[in-house]
Figure 1 (cartoon, rainbow, N blue to C red):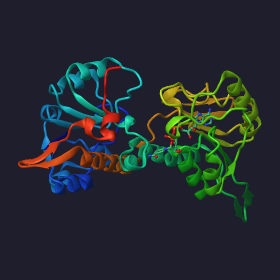
Figure 2: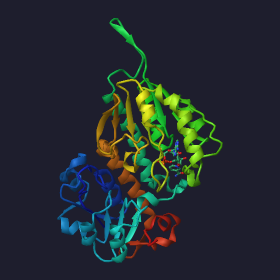
Figure 3: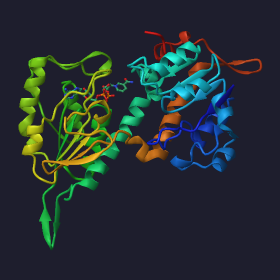
Figure 4: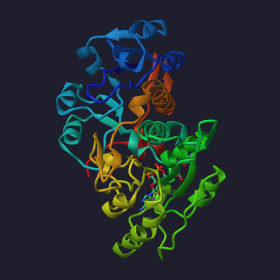
Length: 364
Ligand SMILES: NC(=O)c1ccc[n+]([C@@H]2O[C@H](COP(=O)([O-])OP(=O)(O)OC[C@H]3O[C@@H](n4cnc5c(N)ncnc54)[C@H](O)[C@@H]3O)[C@@H](O)[C@H]2O)c1
């Protein structure tokens, strides 16, 4: 079975869906692999490295007309049009809205696997790209915060004077939030964290941070480990109870998301006004509307003396490792999708396995 990997075309994307390391592993399993010319260059993998790993270098037309096409980001409408009828496509598809690209894929009978829909069960953990990429985002968010903050993160005692550790608050202790806590702790910040799911308290404390506990009168735990949307009353209470904690913070890294819903507002303008000048807010929810209404997606802005960072693609800033983790997710997924036939690997029926069944794109 032949895999084709087109080059990512979005301006903010430097990752690639397969890396030389994973090409080697997939070749050993019996796959043939081709990548569009320079597909991995922005992530630090040149064509020679792929060729050495056993891949072929393809023209754009060859890459898009493959029988099994693997990408990282959702294709554009024009790219969707280049896929062959009935091809298999694996990538992120942003499937919450059935837009024109999704409709075009369905109309062409493309068998598409949306990486966002890989179910969050133990067996699928190694295929879960939301987790692998959120983990990187959590790490990179702290690096970004440290770069924008005009003070130290750790306690510093020198002969020229001393500096107090930064008070850093993480909102949302999911995959990205927990990695942000761990990274900020390693850098010596005084870390506090909050999540609407009560079960996160233990995880926050196990990483050496202080858990912020609020009584909202209802639980925020939803299905599959995710949060659910709070009632209007609980949302207002949450904003009010969080305000004092947040106003004291020097750095806030906010990651709160609810699947297929706009991100909840956790940091009001009033809180930003109360924060010390020079403080930093890294809003990882910027692509979904932000956890702070002052955040502007893909921009760094200063409001009321506070720097608000709205980058929407942190994993692409750690492109080599992010690509390798994503490629690892893809390799693990491909392994359950094929079986050995007389003349090589054959694709199994996608409905046969609960993972590919759940992740398959369907008309809604
Ligand atoms: N394979 C698996 O079993 C698997 C894999 C990954 C994640 N999970 C589970 O899913 C959880 C969440 O995953 P995620 O990080 O992708 O979630 P996510 O990116 O959807 O959300 C980030 C965090 O924001 C929190 N949040 C939402 N609304 C909030 C609010 N109003 N106030 C404060 N916090 C709020 C959520 O509870 C979550 O922890 C994980 O912690 C884990 O328990 C399980």
